[in-house]
Figure 1 (cartoon, rainbow, N blue to C red):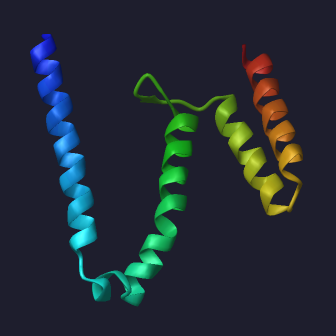
Figure 2 (figure 1 turned 180 degrees about the horizontal axis):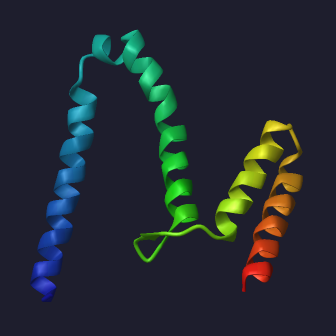
Figure 3 (figure 1 turned 30 degrees about the vertical axis):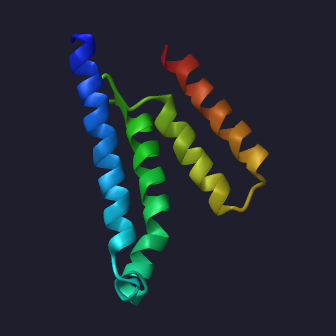
Length: 105
């Protein structure tokens, strides 16, 4: 890719981001304060984080895999459900994932 093409892509991307931000600011306040919109917006960050964690835990090079990462994630979820302190959750998940890695090679 040439330098001119790269700068064109960067500038088009920047303009697109600016227009998207402007469009968001142009939405009437009544639409944004609608109860259904407020409920959905409250869950968007958690949904995005869950999607990122799922992709990182269950894929490798574009393929689905089942390895120690999934075990670590399951142990972390169980520890969180049992209200364990966060450092304990991290240690348990890391230890479980490492143990599976050692046992499976």
